[in-house]
Amino acid sequence: MIVKLFFHNLKFNTMLTQNLKSLCALLAVGSLLSSCTVVRQGEVGVKRTLGKYSDKVYTSGLRTYNPFVATIVKVPVRTNNLEVQLDIPSKEGLTIRSEVSILYNVNPKQVPDVLRNIGPDYEGTIILPVFRSAVADVSAKFFAKDMHTGNRTDIEKSIRDLMMETVKDKGIVIENVLLKSIQLPRSLSKAIEEKLEAEQQAMRMEFVLQQARREAERKLIEAEGVSKSNAAISAGLTDKVLQFKQIEAWLKLSESPNAKVIITPNNVPMMLNPEINAAPAILKPNQ
Image (cartoon, rainbow, N blue to C red; front, side, top):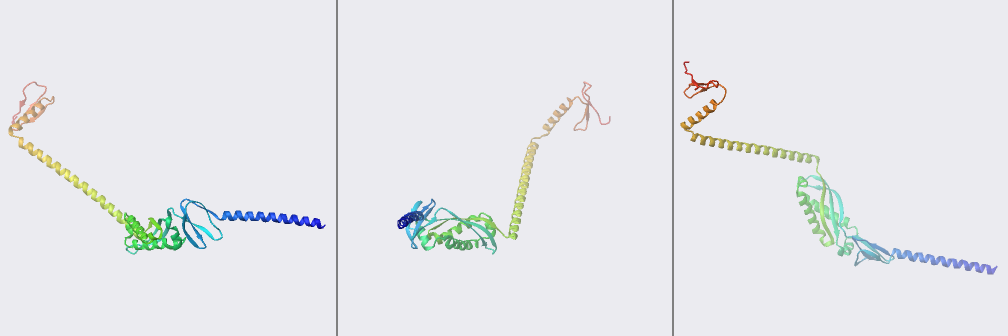
């Protein structure tokens, strides 16, 4: 009985030892897996050991660390799009609802300083407050209608430049600021539409007036040409030329097969009869 109990305890201890080994192996594998991380393309990693950030920047690849005292904080360094909806004040005191995109990136070499001085939430800590301040300063210098015209590009550039003055030394680069949608007050939108319509009507009227002026100039030039032509013809018409032209006309009429009456300059009609091959008869006034 004692021997059987001994072997039973020995078997139990052996199974317990094997289970402990298996558990230790699992803990070792788990610890090994938890101490690895992958830094992807477009981001960098910075090791934080006991709350202190390292100056070394890890690029893409598999990185290891001690999970009990350290971790690797990953920060995207590609272009990020931060969309904001806010009310923009205009020069005349109106409030314009706008949707804005802020395109920015973090300088990879300055990521440790960004984490130390600003923290992981750099969007809410510095980018958004700086943007709201810059957009208020810039938009207050422009009228509301300017945000619907070519001045929009100037507004975007001014906001971007003003933001860069604040964040350029903090490791953040503002690439661009885009005013994607501008919602003007209804009364102002209607006034702008009416103004644009009036301008278009004025342009159409100006076009009609230009056409009328050009047509009048054309007729004047044409009349001057006709007048000069008539003056040239009149200067060359003498009595003999007129008499010769008159004779030519009579000869052409006499060749016609129809009967006709021709009134001569001395009021003496001539009767031409195509059926009689004779000289034309001259009718006296008393006949």
